[in-house]
Image (cartoon, rainbow, N blue to C red; front, side, top):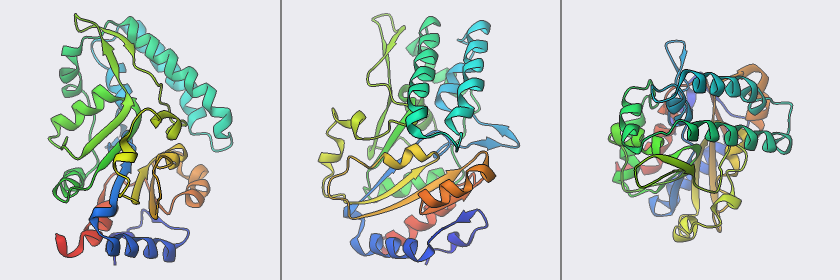
Length: 290
């Protein structure tokens, strides 16, 4: 059905279930399909040539608009909290307050830097952010077939949108929920808008004030893409779900986390910096329409 599922990077606990869901998605057609995806390290690359690629927060952290002292403090936060974020032995309940702590401290540090709205395009242009290989095909296929793409991110919305804009893939079928900046009349960052979104609260509690999923109530089939176990709750707000296919990118600490990811996601992609598998699945679902 989908030759890309034969790739060595692919891990499936229940291949028969995966085949059943993909068949159902094809049979039901594109009018009932939506894609819900994380952004950082899911649509963007985790690494390139042995170096880490930046998240939307890192793009700011590493930029020239951040003072040396500010950068060091942000790095210290990353080194302290990131191992907690990906620790397979701690529960989400244990991690949640610590993630709120991390995001809040990081945002407060960014506020001190007096970031200008007019600087964001250059900050993104000067960064080393990269979308995964095959990203253009992914975004273009969804756009051409009017399949809504909902990007649910704990990153910085203004930066994320600029990454998509510069890659020329920010199509009208895309809707983003993320941490957005609020600028004053002079275009200086003054706060981050509520609610705070972190890795482990990407669920309906954050979406209560948006009507996104209600407006798409006929889109009861979902492909969900993420890179953390917290991403699995991103579709919780969708009413009357029929079929969900979950694809998880396992980017880091692969051996320690493999078991948990295999149990949680339908398809796990280990250290795969491409969207080949996702594009292969979409190609099959779209079938004769392509």
